[in-house]
Image (cartoon, rainbow, N blue to C red; front, side, top):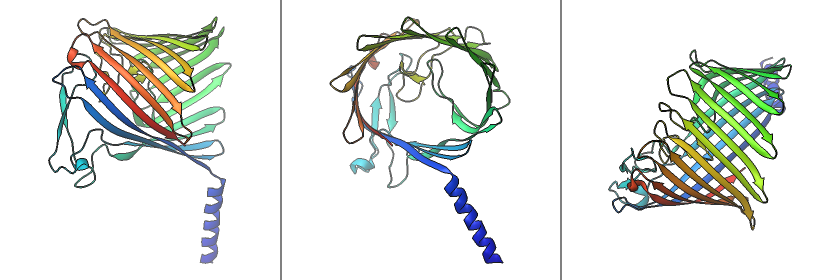
Length: 354
């Protein structure tokens, strides 16, 4: 009898596995970055860095479970990597506004006498999606994504329910007791609009196309005084060139954050850490040349006295026969407030997705 029960349990498990639709996707990239600082007091740097992502998706009917793994290694030269028992100290100047001065970071050990804190794989997202009647449900932990005004955030214990009624989309999101959000969206005369009521403010989005020109509007309105942020975007195509212009504005008590096509303003290592009240304007031109995608961006950071800065960026992307993608990015940063942060950067990236 026991053997029959065991056989039935095994058969049931195998059947469940066979019924599940499981997929694995991911990506890995490696970067070589050379930074040449104009200030004689700042050491130039040559850094190799790596980043990997792995996504496992299991699907059964209308129910899906997603697990996202992410990891990266430490991005400075380590003492053990050059067989030198003495820990090295590397000086660098952050590519930020003039409030950030030159800093130092000290290399650690990598694999011999210890593991660097960044050198690991983490479960970043773990969530379930399903449907109950006409209501879509999502619960677990996930990143809400970057946008042109705010940085992304990831929380556990999140819940989201969404549905459509008579052409109106309704979504309720809860991260904890203080993070309830209700979003209502629809399309009016060719204009997609949405309104989100938040715990301490609201968000308004609108997008449309007029005469071949794409237009976007996004506002993050805060209940706090002088803490609103707003973003405007226009995009079109002229001949073989795609043109996009974006402007993000912040009131004196708000700060533009996020990591998007305009730049990395999250304030983390390697990002442009902005000051409250600074505005960002970016112009992008993109085209194809001999099988390469070539993109030029000019970004102006302004509206705070003595802290204006700008950078030009040229990006050349080419798919390789091996299935990988090669990308060259050249950046020229100019800081009017502190010339010690002026620098040119060459980044060479080899990336593959599967």
